[in-house]
Length: 186
Image 1 (cartoon, rainbow, N blue to C red):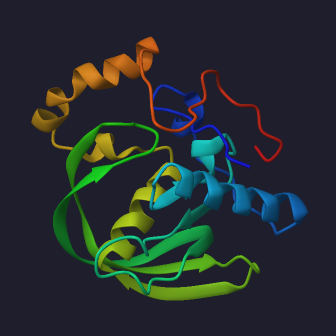
Image 2 (cartoon, rainbow, N blue to C red):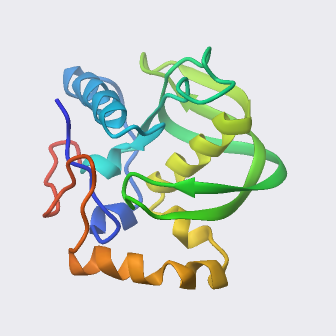
């Protein structure tokens, strides 16, 4: 099932998501729907708040990117960044801000503690696009959007687009939530 994606002006994107205490059939279903929704929207990452569920869950699949064809899709639950190394700038976009792009500085590599789709505790080192996408999606779990991390002068350049989200005059090539979603996992 393809879920509508919450956009910039939706309150759920500004809330800190709650940790999951385990996996049940409903969460397994949500994970499958999130992958389907992300792929339908040509995305490479999606956090649960973006589809109306305020829980600490995200999915990524960067296998469609150049140099990452062997990358395995990931389910990340209750992530916690333990360490960061280096920094780099890169242009980012977001399914919750269709058509908006901007440069964001982030750590180039991270050490991440998280639970996988079997709710097993994992620790991993991630760099390159893995690190970038994981940090972007973890920001969603903390109520932060990539535009919040942009330089003020760069953000001013996209202010008209951000205002369009607030006024409701936005379209996307995938379903977006026209009204805040009420979720059974929130």
